[in-house]
Length: 126
Image 1 (tube, rainbow, N blue to C red):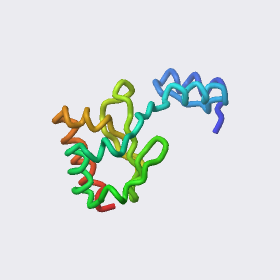
Image 2: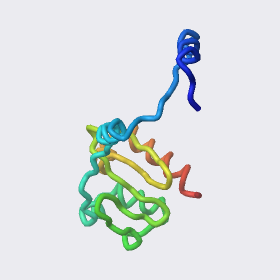
Image 3: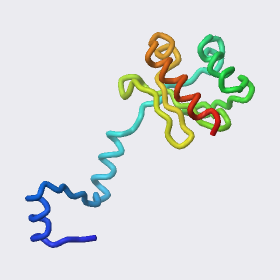
């Protein structure tokens, strides 16, 4: 929906902000800023970490059911991405994709462990 200049000025005076479609140049700048930095995954090393094994057990998965992809682990019902903690140090779930810091970072943070267990328990049944 487009508006004229007078409508825009009235809405602005009332404190109503408006959004506009971005042109292609602005979109490419935004996506570069929002890109995640994914950590390299060594499935053999992960399988030796107790926390990772506990997560698989709680998710009713075995190491044989995990498929290593370029930038994530395919766990069947969800994909697990490990993100660089400098870009984001929280755990989130979006459209059957789990984004977490490294297993080591999670193991060293009680808050991240709690957040991960809650996230998995909320989405385990879906």
